[in-house]
Length: 554
Image (cartoon, rainbow, N blue to C red; front, side, top):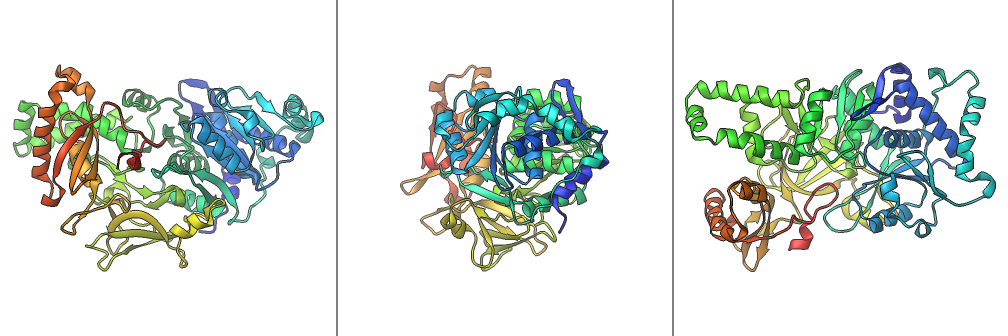
């Protein structure tokens, strides 16, 4: 696909000039049209120009999802600079490291983020600006050209440059070389070390054009953005694709608890829902499991025909809970619990599971829900990406999944050794995921290469598959399966809410967990059996994208 990314947005802003583009959830007055956004982008371009920002310079951005966050991101890439999105959940030390390592010359941040940063420890920054109130938070440099002074005169300069007002005819962005970097996205992988992923204009275009041609979003469609836009998954499909086609994006800048999200779904009624498994799994566990495990319901579900009517009713309620207007729910970012997946498939809920990684900006595979194959993560993107399994039998013997194509990153910033470790001389990106592949490119992930355990009998054990079963057991909130000695042990963070409902204290959990262990061992392979369950009092340490930091528990 040879479409130019910057041209895509220029055309979209012109074509959708009067349509709503962005709204901060809970504040309808914040809604701006595509024309409004284009004007704000033009003002930022004028500001960048006055500060001597050049194409290729890095601009860091850290804060919750807001209209201003999106505007800064779009202004940066359409100017030709490189955006460095920093997850607001990073601690101050990690955020400062990223800003310095990326050589960012400007920082846009929320006030709460900036108050924990040390501007003196960020010598490369010319200024820091608030995305909450557009004020200068800190600055340095030439007294005559300080950002605070430039901002005071920006409206006058803007009116001087655009004497007839800024119209759709003024939208004209310089086309960039497709191999130039557009986004520098730092991973928060479970190894404990962040790497800067260099995503080019071409990488982003591959994702955007696929989203457009697949009609994931379309002119006038509605999207609710609740995943962090600083992460590649939410960025691509809640922002980049939507703004390329004329969608209206409502930005949910709060902690996405299921209760608050369900309320937002009913109000926004999105036409596509992009989510992570955690949201679906919590809704399933808190709203569906209590209903289908009642004795009378279990009897009813055992009766032919009646079960179909009940499942149809559950499906209708679930669809309505998500707003009732969506074509499908796309699940990605982590493996979906198999019990949840099987139930949703049984009731014909319109969902699909995709696969990607930051290094591919992020999409690798996807299949629309009507063609989705259970336990798969979709088909490798035709015409954009290629995949293979490092195995003697790609369909039956798991091996490392390797991919190459338009979406594959340019490499890790200032880290050629790390780049060469994952991209081989033939251009194949080694994902670190283990899986199998059907001839049509459909992928089935078994687990991470680094977490795979080799049993004493030579069997490959994928702890994620055992954890998926264990997490559905009573009083288990989350779990981690590790090798201890010559056997397997499960570390469990208990479900305190369920314990409270059943009036159970922690000293009662030992015998209960032993029963859980025995039940689990009945449904796993003999070589996957757990010898002991260890309870921990606090939630597992996680990365900002909510993956467990497994390396801390080995």
